[in-house]
Length: 215
Ligand code: AMP
Image 1 (cartoon, rainbow, N blue to C red):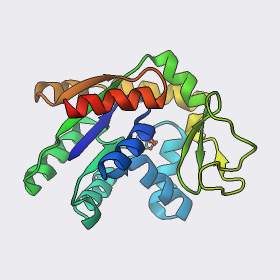
Image 2: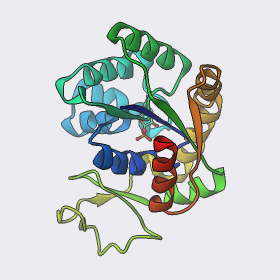
Image 3: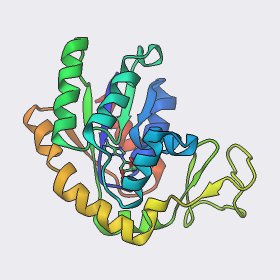
Image 4: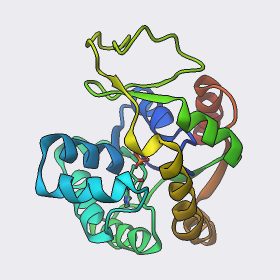
């Protein structure tokens, strides 16, 4: 199965992708995670990406398209994958189509996570991430003791992403509305887009998503 998870920042793409990946044994491919790894490694790509990400801007298309090509043609993606955070521009969606054509495959579903802006702004400012295992938490929902990760047990590994701070959040929404949202029409016109109401807890959203995938 090949899924594309689409939605504004804070819609819950990362959380749902993790849950779907566990349920259906799919590789979770997040361009945001790949870029954050490059930043942690201090590579040239990481330095360039950090400059863009800290401002809430997009990393250039050719860079993320290259990352995606490498990931989906790799051995571990053979039995299926979920794209989280890609495509984010029309040229990225077109390049993905070309790549799918070359590989002779099609996405099974493009899931549009529908959510009000006010809900996601709240979620983003309460979001915390584990540096070590990538687990996602919400300060309002999850009980965290200090900065220790309750999932992998690493001490002091919980942090707030720089791009989850207020000014950057505003710019991420501007970029989403101007550049990313038009992708909905692109996939709708191909008959691939399915809307999923993404209000509520991760379990509620996940169960709606499973219903959508299985029906
Ligand atoms: P995410 O973790 O998906 O919210 O992505 C965090 C940041 O990484 C975004 O705000 C962008 O700066 C960058 N990024 C992630 N995916 C892409 C993409 N497909 N195209 C361009 N930039 C991206």
